[in-house]
Amino acid sequence: MSLLDLPVFSTAASVLREAALKLRTAPSSVTIAAPLDEDGIFASALLEAALLDSGIPFQRRLRENPVPAKGPSIVIGTATVSQLKGIESDPLCIHLAPLEVDALIASGGDTRRGVLSPIALAAALGNSIAPSGSISRMLMPWILTGNWLSEGLEHTYDPVYTVLRDYLASEGHIRVFPMPEVPEIDPASLPGIDSVALGAVRNRWGQLDLEGRAQSLSHLLKPLLDSELPSTARLEELGWHRVMVSGWETDLASQLVGFSKTWKDFPDGRRRQASDTIDSLLRLGKIS
Image (tube, rainbow, N blue to C red):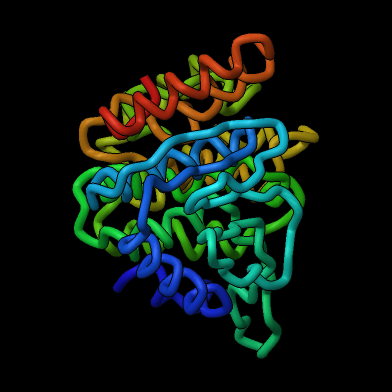
């Protein structure tokens, strides 16, 4: 199953499939015009992976206010929309922006709405351009970045994040582990965790049955429930659902914590950080 076959992409699928077709036959180099922010960086990386896999020439432009180029362009927006803007022609221009969607239908029939990040949309477009591309497949776990870095998980359950995470796991792109099974975590990814207690849980984890593991991890995380942050939804992900890929030393959340800290602490170096991050993702599939 491709990303665009997921119901969460239903309102965007036709536009993205048409965009992929037109990009594969673009008459000249494609410009990726993205904001110089976290969404722009990871969306650009996912698009670049697909264009590299397909042999489509491109150039990257990260700006505070991205605008279309004179030739074929993919423009990443920041304002949330309820429907993707139609594809423009002469010159070709494809617009991606945070998209409100129906993510899940609850057992009672209620619809759970959420937001597809530009990163997820870029991944879906890239998947349609190069469905079997090796670089694109390597970067698939980073689809989760937009929803992970957004405020959605700070307030409530994020159905879009859950749908994407479960899809990646079912397709073999990621594996999900409880925190004690991750070899290295950045302590800043879960402030307030007792590192000594975590080490003790790790040491006896292999001897515990499922009930024992649940009790041990719940006891370890319980003191954090009274903290303002992280939210309960994010705490559950950080405790029980750490995202890992074969060959990674640390999980996705830990990598993003380090990335975000540098991004916030060194604003003057953001352009260099953006370039280094994209290059690292395209070469290694992770943030080095």
